[in-house]
Image (cartoon, rainbow, N blue to C red; front, side, top):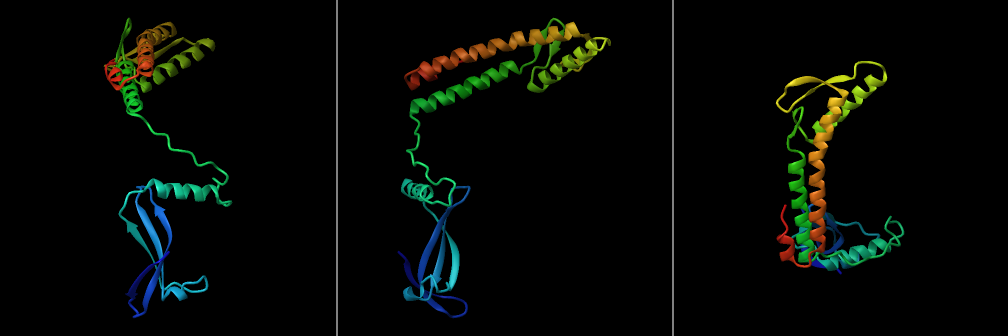
Length: 211
């Protein structure tokens, strides 16, 4: 197949035979055709030099047929890393599948709000973000190392309002335990709600599940 249209370039050369060499899909799913133009159909052999080469955008959606053709060519090409692969049908999500995925994301978001909220303990109010918890874990580890080396088993740590105090290893571990006691129920609640989502058989049932 080719395109016949008479054109004249800047040097005055007239040509009328155009072949699409390839169709390219960029990262934004835009289509571009690379075209080679020749003087005429009988001057478009492998030995002939193209008068012009250019790329042209194709303002059309990527069709299943186009993608299927590309997939078939790739698995049949010995030079391609996908050679010998199997072209399989696309996995399509039902409305129920989409509703379940959306609900699980909502549940996870609500869980995060709870677990990362400041936690009140018997020794003060402490931050409970992932960064806060990593810091507390590091402080406990350093204090444990000091204790094992026969040094004072205590270390400074800040409450959520910035108040700095020195705590013993036992106190630091108590803070960690009391924070964990408030975090674990959120994960347990999430697990139960996700189980309800998985068991739901209609979109309405899924949407009725709340944190």
